[in-house]
Structures are given as structure tokens and as C-alpha cells.
Length: 248
Length: 327
Image (cartoon, rainbow over all chains, first blue to last red; front, side):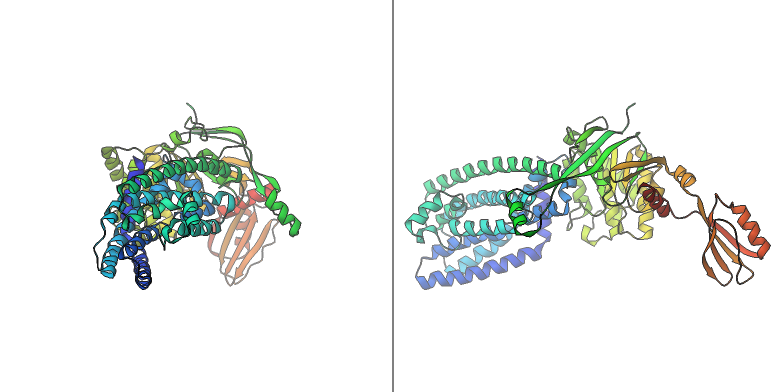
């Protein structure tokens, strides 16, 4: 499959962009330090630090794919890239996923070590259980970013849209705090959004390592993944029609 | 035999949004933006035979890129028909993509932090090329383009000229039958431009591939192509062999005289002095009014000549004159 070769080359490319990975890792460690102190002051269990280590890990490894696609659309590069025997959309998704996997690996190592030092405890059993789900969730985040990037065909600047999506994702996904600390009604409302399974759904395994929860989250992620792939394919077809009307 | 590229009455109209003035206009724009049609390509017709190298020139906004995008299957035309290698590009884009190559001077397909060899290997996968074919084709092109020592250097460490040679190799790896080149020498120095032009021309001759080149640099057109299509305001103004262009459109010559006397005066119809310096006079001669030999004879009567050169005006001026004739 061509996309696997593209993702593999993107991963190799990302290995050479060490500066970016280092900057993200430093920010990650700073966030972990601050939040671990906060949880410690509130008397929360150490597994909460592992929770934040997991959510921040995935978020900070995320590629800036929406910006990348927006840039291609604004500069007209997309017109030239679609004249190849491989889909532009799935090429970008493969590039985003490949480069992101390398960052997941690099940042994950640093974050895991930091969380261990900060909590003084090895990763709870649930952390290992959450890793495959984190990878699946990461793939969905790449799809979300691709969808936001394609919106540049209609709205030009996708940054406001990305900002709104990101804040909803951070809040309803439980980036800094597990949804359990939210009011009951908000917890329930969050479960109806695609954001809760993206972070909280699997990261809560750090303090509640329940295989049934993991299986349910996996199903939810797969369901949202299928919906996102269908939506992205439709959006891409619409985008190519817009390109045809307005020119590249 | 059918042509490599056949274009008949090709037309493309873009619908462009227009932002009205004032607050009410802004509100209207939000709800239902007013649009206006812009004709980018208007009934273009031409045919290019296999192996031909054709320059496609015109001022900015003339319709060159839109035409090429339609020929590459990126855009659907509003009207007319085109066939590239027998394919209708917009209906069979993916199949056509295997048989065409594109080089766009300001855009790169090479991975910045990796050696060009890695991009080449990926392109072999993208174009479904088997390992043996890829290795053979790469070896041919690497030798022809002299990029052997660059293959394992990260692209970010290459000069612009070296990078462009690698870009063209990347575009030729799948042995395309038609190559679209858009400003392939933009930003390059004089030496690198000459190298790229010769390589493109020689590769096209060797492979028998068809080249359609757009460029604002008339040097690209003269060195690479045999024929020129001039487009202006979406319409084809001219379709001629490049050699004919000089014969037909050059009604002026530039004559430089190095003289024994400091200054000379020549009063001949259609002859104007464009530059003077001690012992040097540059004349522009309208050959319809006064032939060159008459100018030379008049100069010899006026003074002793140390040297004399007769030049055509630069190709850029010829093309400008063609554009101007369309206004």
C-alpha cells in the first residue's frame, strides 16, 4: 500500500527534525512538572499524574496537519500534488501519522521517565493497556486535523476553526483533568461528543484499568474513525469540486 | 497516429466571489456572496505531436497555468475537449498520472531532510515501478543529470541548481511520455539555467518525450523548444516554429559601430541612434525602411570602421511585441 511507504518515509523525515521533537518534549516535561505539583497539592493519587502524562503525550505529538494542508491550498500547491497516482488526502494523512508516530515514540520515552520520577511509581497496569488505544486515538486526531485543513477551501483561514475545535477537544476530552472531576451533567454530555473517547476514554485506564472499559473505548474509537473517514472522503470530493470552480 | 496533446475549443470560466463595499455589502457577502465569471481560457485549440518540445508563453493571467491544469486533469473545462496521450485528462486523471511528469520551479517534491535517493524510492512505489525497472531508470537519469554524488546528500544541503536537477530526475523516473514544465529555471543562476535547459532538451530527444514548457524566461523557450504557442487573455495568439518567430517578427536590428572618429551622424530613414559614446554608436534599424547594407555603406562613407556587430533584438522584446499586438 502506497500510504504505508509514505508514512514510513515521513517517519524517517521526522527523525531528522530533532529540534521540533526536543521543543515539544521540553514543553511536555514542563506541563507534567506543573500538573504533578498541582495533583500532589490536591492530594490526588499518583495515577492522576500518569493520566495527564498520557493525554498530554498524544496531544503534544500531534502533527500540525491542518496548517500544512491549509498552506498547500493557499499557495496552490494542492493543484500540483493531486496530479499524481495517489490521493492527496490520504498522502497527507499518511505523512501526518508517520511523522506523529516518531514523535509519540520520542516524547513518550521522555514523558514516561518523567512521570515515573515525579510519582515515584512505575506505570500502572492500565497505562500499558491504554497504549494501543492511544495510537488509535492519535490516528483519529490526524483525521480531524485533515478535515479542519480541508475547510480552507471554503473559509480560507482555518485557525479560528482549529482553535474552537482544540478548546472543545481539550475540555470535553479531559486533557488536564479527568472527566470524573466535572459535574455529573457535563460528564454525561461529554460522553455524547467524539472528544471524550479521544483522550479520557483510554487515559482513564491509568487509574481504572478495566478491560471492559478499554473494549468499549476501542469500539467507540473505531465507530468515530469510520464516521470520520467517510466524512473526510466526502469533504475531499467536495473540496475538489470547489478547486474546479475557483481554480488552484 | 494521434497527437500527444490535442486541444479543441478548450474553455474555462472561473466563478470568483466579489466582496461588495459597505456594511450592507459585508452582510450580503456573508449570506450570499455575489460572484462574477472570469474567462481564463477562451476557445484554445492546438495539437502537439509526440516528441515535440513546445513553449507555452504569455503574460501573467494569460491562461497558461489553467490550460496546463486542465491538461493534467486537475481542472475540468467549462467547454471543449482535450486529449493527452489519448486520455481525457479530467475523466481519467489517475491513469494519465502514470504517463505524465510535472516540474514546477517553485514547488518541491523532494523530502527536505532526506537524501534525494529516498524520495526517488518512494516515487517508485507511488508510480508502481518494480525494483529492477526503478534501478535501471534511476541509473540512466543519474548519469545523464550528473547527480550521482548528490544522491546521498540531504536535500537541505543542496544548492538550488543541484536541487532542481534532482527535482527533474524525480519527475522523469517513471519515464513519462509527456512532461509539463512550469518555470523550471526560476531563481537559478545563468550557468545552472543553461545546464537545466540542455538536460531537459537532451532527455526529451533521447526518450522521445513530449515537452510543454511555460516560462517567462525566453531563454528557456529558445534553448529547449522548437515551437511556441503564445496565449493572451485566454486566447491563442500565435502557434509557430521558434525559428519563424525571428524571421517574421524581427523587423528591427541593432547595429553597433566602433568608429575611428569620436562621433558620426547618419541621417537615414528608419535609423535611430539609441546609444552614443566616444568612438561607439548603437543604432536601431528598421530593415523595412533601410536595409542593413545601406546602413553599413553610409557608415563607411562617414568614417573608418574598427568593428561592427549586427544583432537581433532579444527574444523577450519579440514576445512583448506579440503581446502588444494583441492589445
